[in-house]
Length: 564
Image (cartoon, rainbow, N blue to C red):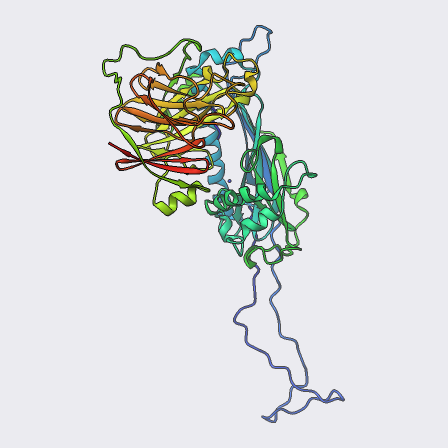
């Protein structure tokens, strides 16, 4: 089933004595007598000018209160173990012990922050129950609540900033739960939430500093040079998009990365600590820690239990109606795999073609080392080459989001037709995950590429391995987007590239692997039947349509064919 995931302190300004008249101190001789000034007058007494006393920082106390929303509807297991089907636990951050009058702007900022968190928890609970109701069979497999619980930690609270972060436990009955992070930093004078670029003095140089100080949860591991090269552009993008989770204490800036942000789940949470003693100019002057005369932070934080509320189904239905415009409008299809051993051609399609509708003539062959460098030099746009951090790519009016998570028994693809990624289709392909082949747990299928064309979703499923180890791999599927039914499945071992293209009622794809034959394959898009195959030197990777030409980027060679 679909998973749902779900921001200070203000201190008084020091009062300076402004606009006071300067008092000139008279000169004295070495014996202490008062020397006459130029006007001939003397002042027998020397007095210090009066200075207005510095105002002490108002003692700032913070209250952290826990709240929980749960579904009144619970599991009905045979073993008698029951639990709410959905659970949301969140924490509010408020001013405590009469501090509101001293920090009015901060109170406003925190009130808005808390209201949004409560709304988000309600919306998330309702959305989770919507997913459960849409997949009632899933309830039988649940071993615990579909839960999201927050644990909030205050890091700094002084006369400049309030900084805190949350580690959020999410469990949606997959193979394992996930813990992820969020953070918030308030300017205590304005009550506004601070973006990272307003706090750091050199935002452009920050990604490299973060990389230089990265540590996985297992501190005895050092990242390799290759891993560092892969992680730096990801960090740069996250900093540029203000997606970095960070806090600033009185000693250091800490940066937190969720599992999968930079490396695999096995690395655990990855973090970086930038100590001010090593980077004294890291922060802008306005937010560098100082002396505020307040008690230690631990003595100014009060953690409280809070409200626990169970919502019945009628209340959840009301929330779903209230937030209807914010929920996605996705049409879900659970796609059933045809028999693995029988052909799955569409024999009855009246538009079937049996002969090639065009000819291919090779007109160019060149060496290839790096696909992106070669493509840029030739002005080619490679379909599916550039993907965001979530693996999404856009092609022919759709944004595609493959889901390849065999550990959680997930295989599928979402196709969105709007930029907000709220409208479209979701195809569950988990029935294709495991093949009948022995050892199939090591050679599960992956969505290599997908494209929607005239209401049909064409998908390439493959596991790049030796065909002797996994013969049920590297094939094309055609799925009716209106019904979720498989129209056809091609022969095996015809498609394991990084993309394919559709041209004149055909699908152009390819297959190749180490010590195996490498071919371009052309299939009928109406039935999946093989129409033509072309031998190439090395494994095809990408296909590009350039007007009336087909360009194929292979492992170390690029071919150009004229299409007639």
